[in-house]
Image 1 (cartoon, helix red, strand yellow):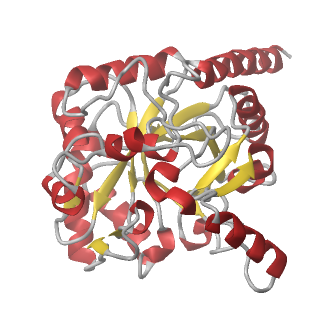
Image 2 (image 1 turned 180 degrees about the vertical axis):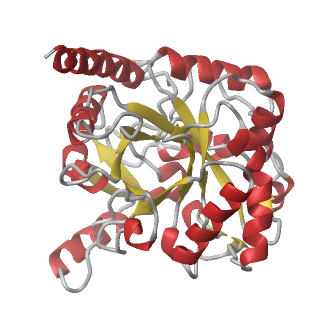
Length: 369
């Protein structure tokens, strides 16, 4: 089996255009930029706010912006975007416009796949407690059929990312679905009835929370922990519990060293069905304030180490199965954006290009032997 370079796919957030629901919940004109721009440092050396450089404070309703994003990602070796898709059941969608326009227009000519972000929207990450904004529901088989029909034009698109000719379909919370095994079987049957060879269905694996999705019929899983780590402790560990309460009482969020966090977002050992999801940086204090989490030392060079480990973990994968997900392309209010900002510029993107170049040389050397 000839070794091949990894396929890097970056998660893509569509919340950069106003919608009436966000206007009602948060105020007229709310987008992800609202929290991003008003962020302030919470401790000495805290890097906030993050200000975009190359693309500015963009609006995803503008096709030229979507084209620039694709060109930038392609230039540094990212194969495609994985668009977050919000289907709440009974035909209810949010933030669907950018992706619908990408599919309908055929532009940009850049590969993509879909992650069904199947979770309720609450105000917990934006300072509004447990306020329910939009509830995720699972009405049953007829709703699955309706959902599938909405996505079928994307699955049939020649740009759609595939494994073994099957469109890749991610599910963010596999075990929130009442019967995940039956649902996966139903989606595969719908795909075959529509003339597709099937679907490559991937579920997020949340360490220490659930079983592996593969045990319920998923083709693969993503080693995923988001937020990556919340070590607030409990009364079972009273010293740690008291320490983090003490910090929050003084207005300091949870701070985690990037090197220590790596083990939470990378699989511990190689697996033919488990794809790494590499987090290059994290700071969701623009959304969550003192309840947020900050990665300390999340630099391009530390990201290089994490990316290299992900490459090592996937070297035994079959051709076109060597997937590595990057979190994320543009989650600005979580400090989790590969898109350039005024401080790091193209630093993280340059690491991707450099490590891919080295990995290609390794693969060519193995193939020559």
